[in-house]
Image 1 (cartoon, helix red, strand yellow):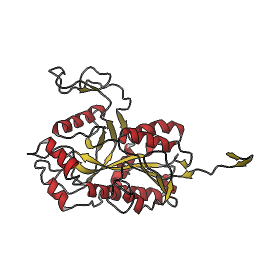
Image 2 (tube, one colour):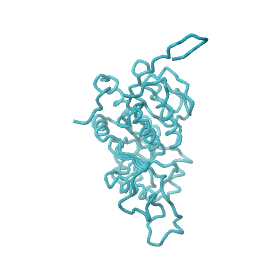
Image 3 (cartoon, one colour):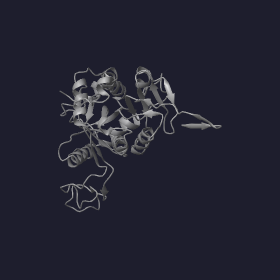
Image 4 (tube, helix red, strand yellow):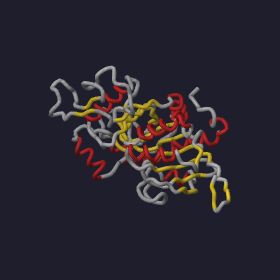
Length: 340
């Protein structure tokens, strides 16, 4: 309720949101140039109604479908604060909203190829830890990186998680995977050329495909075989062997942390979070190439060879789920779907 000059004016009812599409960056404009994670959603989902937002990027809504698009900015600090700000925004009713993270990532070549799309059930944080420089660590340690509250790397059982791992709704993840697993994904000569370098990694050499695979979030952009081995072991450690590291990005544990805090208030529901990552690059070098050469060719020189395909596939796979929820909102509003 608002009061203006002694007159009482009723505040507008909050807008019911059916799906929040969470993207992390846009390259330039929201339309008409090289597409980042947000542009295809903005254009194809007709997100025409802008809402000023005191964060990285304004919000955009399709008022007919109830799909709301946001760009959090890169890194866990940005994703956590953006999602929290939206969750507390009185202009929107997010109590029944589904949250779809749709973004690009580095992928483990042991699991998938460039352009592939992975639905995550586990989100593991790669930043919350103790660390001793490898040059000063005990000689019998495999790494100087170990869990807070433990006395050595990979000590079991691991300490009780306090932000190190989030287990998403496995039934919802499986439903999204089953709905999209047969979708054809974009391929190109550039992707074929890049994946041909990964001799000895049969999954890296396949045409792009949809799979289930978990995400490691970390603010440091890491690359290389040794760190890739660490990512696999760190993910298995925090998921008690149930998770499989597939994608590396920066933001998803921040998003999950904010939704964890919002859920008891009824303003959002962590149980409705889905995380979809698509492969713009590999997390390690191909045979015969150093880690530094591989990183610099992708990130500092030629650019991500899978960028265009991964952005397109994030939309193609993610929009299948969004459209299903919006079209059958009467079914999904009160009942979270699960695979048969």
